Amino acid sequence: MKRWIDRCIDAFLALLIIGMTMVVSISVFYRYVLNHPLSWSEEITRLMIVWLSFVGAYMAMRENKHIGFDLLVSKFSSKAKTWIALLGQLLILVFLFVVFWEGIAFSREFLNVGMPYTNLPIGWFYYSVFPVSGALMILQTFLSLRDLWKSIRST
Image 1: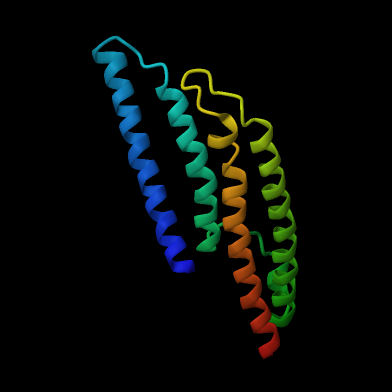
Image 2 (image 1 turned 180 degrees about the horizontal axis):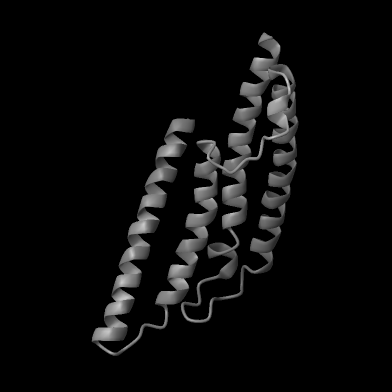
């Protein structure tokens, strides 16, 4: 199941990059060649960047690519490092639940507010990225916690 989700996310991110490239290219063509700028292109590009950033954060979390600072933690024993990692994952989980829950609240609050040029609902298209990416990262954090717990039990 997790591998299927990851493949779908990878395809979604690739489509976002392709779509963003196409929209920006078309926008440049219309602005500088046809001298007729498109009003909606900046709005759609910004929307794609937001989704690319937040869903990309899940991808970075999945591959353990987020920045870390372990100068102090590296001084501890391997067992202590595992317990510190467990505590860190629990704190991350609390934060992600807040992101998820507040993202749902934001999405609901701005459900009927449209974007200026496209009139797409902000709640559906912008703020829904918080619960979606939050849920993905919660799933990944649970998997990390499971692996950490297994390593603690085996020692």
